[in-house]
Image (tube, rainbow, N blue to C red; front, side):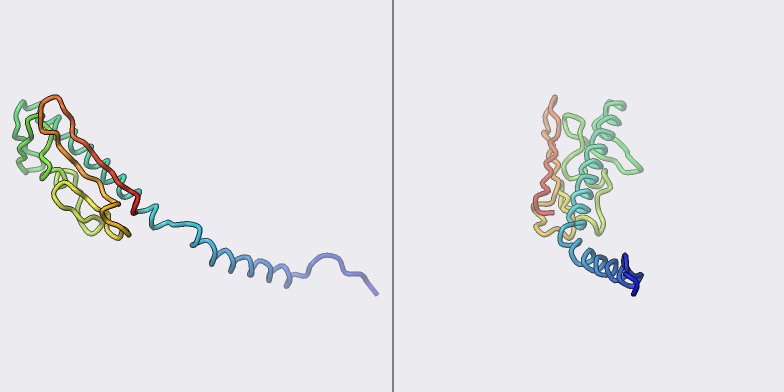
Length: 140
């Protein structure tokens, strides 16, 4: 009788199928893609807010006026030529179903703890000071 060496094709296919099933069930437990996506969305909102504040301030400084028109809308800047808290989200374009926006706060929709997945813009309001951007991403 002949000795058999190696594995048959059926045995190899079965091993691959079993490994595929194990990987499909175990991978979601180790990878939290939704949380990472919410954190990335929060960072994008923070970047938009910072950029909008700088561009609006630049427009106000160039015009040497506290009132600037950006995309057809007039905005009145604070004493330090930064946008007001109430205007920053409109200037940054942070809105829609991805964010819950209230005044100068943007919370990422779908976060487990919305107050712990947000970015807050606070204008110092005095000359020679800059606004503060507080990002909290512990509840995303």
